[in-house]
Amino acid sequence: MTYAIARINRIRADETPEAAEHRARFAAAHATQPGFLGSLALPLGHDSELVLNLWKDEASAVAGRAALADAVHVHLHPLLNAPSELLGAGEIDGWEELRRT
Image (cartoon, rainbow, N blue to C red):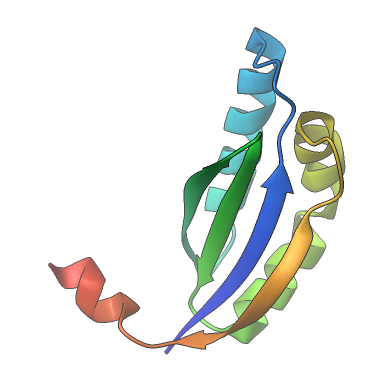
C-alpha cells in the first residue's frame, strides 16, 4: 500500500521569482528521497493549498521527513504565512491502480 501525508499550507500571496526558485528547489529535494512517489497540490483559495505527499511506505515517509528538515526550513518556510497544518497520515488504497491508468 501507499502511505500518504495530507497538509494544509498557507502560502504567501506574493509569488516572486525567489518564491518560485524556493518551490522548485524544495520539489527537487523531495524528489530525490527514496520511496517518494510524488505530491499533489490542490489550491483551496485564500492563499491556501491542500498538499498530499505520497510515499512507498511509512518508513520512507519518516526517513524523508528527517532528511528534508533543512530543505523545509530553507525553501518551504519562506513561502508560508503560517506553519503547515497536518491533517493526517496513513496508508491509502488505489494509488497503484490510478498510476497505471
